[in-house]
Length: 123
Image (tube, rainbow, N blue to C red; front, side, top):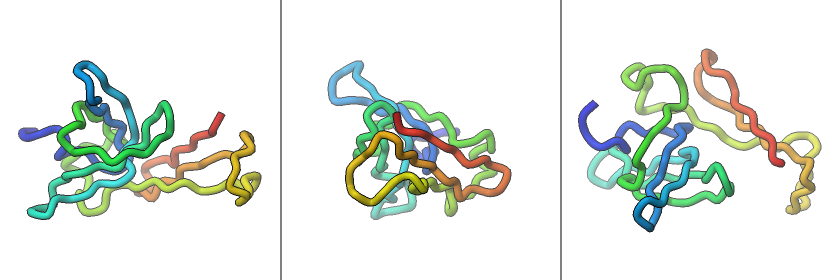
């Protein structure tokens, strides 16, 4: 596909983001895509760092590599309804605001049934 790499990034994709220093980079999951004012192309991404869990707003041109959410080809995926993941609390996780260390966050996929739900446990 021609054009910048970030035009193909969708919610759920794992991306490599260029850092502030030359040669510096980090990886994260795309949580939200913000379109530009002049068209549907992405201009900003909300990305959760896979190492720290920190959620950052990133300019689209800082995305330097993309690992798709699934094996479904890009042209077969609908750009208007990309897969979206949202955290859900497990029964053992209270609403006290603190983290007990035993709580789990499960990412439930709203993608078509051919995709399996992704689960993740906090250490």
